[in-house]
Amino acid sequence: MDIAGLGVFVVWLLAGFICGIAGLGGAMVGVPIISLFVPLRVVVPLSCLLTLCIDTSLTFLHFRYCNWRSLVPMLAGMVPGAFLGLKLLLFLPETTILASVGFFLLLVVVWQCLAKPVSEPRNDFFPVGFGAGFAAGTLGSSTSFNGPPSAAYAMYMGWPPRRAVGTLSAFYAVSECFTCGIMWHSGLYTPEVLHLVVYGIPGVLLGAVLAVPVIKRMDTRRFLRVLRVIIVIAAILCLRKAYF
Image (cartoon, rainbow, N blue to C red; front, side):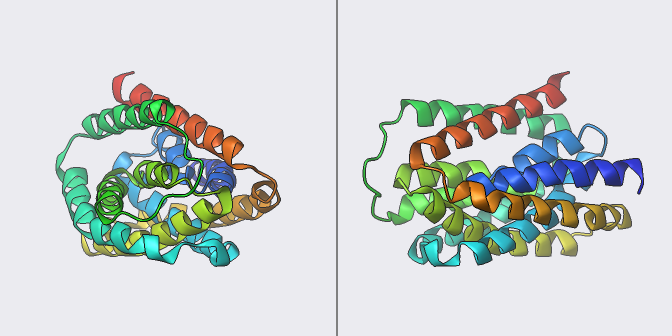
């Protein structure tokens, strides 16, 4: 196993475990760390394939908890957002993308800390779901960070942990299929990317399986704290990569 492959395996083992607990965080952990020694235009398509693997697995594991009605507005917004994000990836400098994502993630955490906690789950509201899907699609195809906008939507809706993990995983799996398809069509899946995918898949699946006993015992308040910590760490890593 080469050094880059070993690094991808270890980092995505951790990313898969975190994603299995929180329903997101795989790309937010994997992308900033892997981008320290692999170019971003390799890391993003690599991350999209690996997150597709883990989110398909999590959808299967939490299938009966998924709120399928909530997926409709999110997926409707994801499609145009994914095309916009791909344009950004191809034409914007790497540092600009990373800095923008870092500041965006910090804004998500500040907003969530200031917002009033939701005592009961809210009813679906199409414009909010569409906006979350559009933002997730844009970030997903430009950085593979489709988690923060949809996680913010889950916080807004007040979903308990297993419903959030099941619903978000289903959304990510569908949106990542679409994103991987347009990346493949754009020629981003080079031999270098596919070589690293071979090392990442075992790590990410093992991490997801190890997380199952943890998520079964986690309450909503602790779940939200985990989300905040993941997003803050990802923001710091992105800003560090962009400016230092």
